[in-house]
Image (cartoon, rainbow, N blue to C red; front, side, top):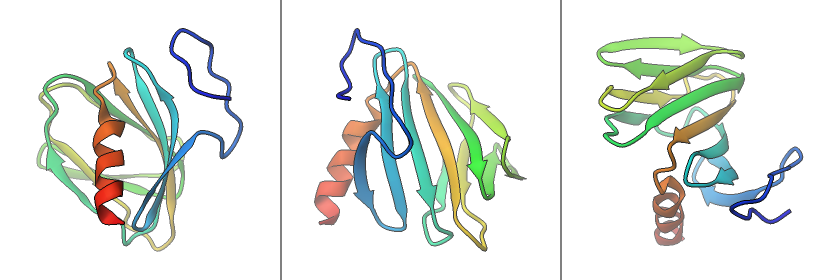
Amino acid sequence: MELDEGQAILLGPGEGESIPGAHRTLIVKAERGEFEITEFECSPEFGPVPPHVHDDHTDSFYVLEGEVEFTIGDETVRGGPGTFFAAPPGVRHGFGIPGPGRARFLNIHAPGARFFAGVRERARTED
């Protein structure tokens, strides 16, 4: 099913736009003005994504499999399946995959912040 603004979204496992990258699989599940959702599967060699701040959206994570290590301000917290983390605008955060295995998680940006435009551009320049 093609993602179409103004329409319902129904995607099965593995469906959505795949954006290639080193040590990770990224599948776009939704890309709308009110939110953007991606499913990440990363190996420990991915990242880590250094701590940063967003001024215009909340950056949220929901761990499905494996473990993700979150930086929240100056603290580091490890979370497994079922862990949810949301960094509202202005909160310093980052993440990494501590291993030993892969991790799979949802990453939600609300409202939409044109996150995937930057990811697509980086993927093109990595080729």
